[in-house]
Length: 129
Image 1: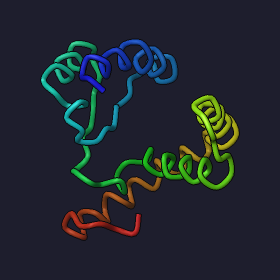
Image 2 (image 1 turned 135 degrees about the vertical axis):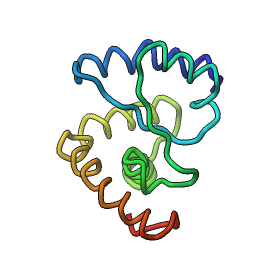
Image 3 (image 1 turned 120 degrees about the horizontal axis):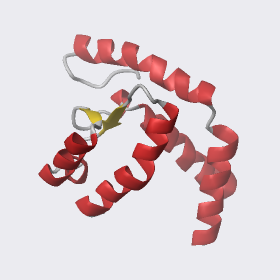
Image 4 (image 1 turned 45 degrees about the vertical axis):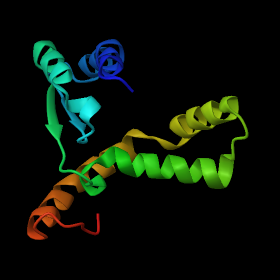
């Protein structure tokens, strides 16, 4: 993904969605991928008023979306088993509609506080989260 494409995603999808769901403001949590934190991207996020939090490198335990990606991969590999691109897209949509609930998202996000404390106590090393 090019950095310009990432900005398009922010502009066309994240901002409208985030502002609708969280009119008082929201934070974007992302990893250290250079495409997400280039000067081009940082300037756009600053101009657009996007407040973001960068996680330490290789820290999926501090990124709740990683738990969903893991569940999605398991679902696709063990249950849906796509054979072509269309099957893959349909499997992703099915997973998202049937398995990604507000309660599940709240659970993963609420566990983040514990994960951060464990991360600090472990001096940056991997944790059980």
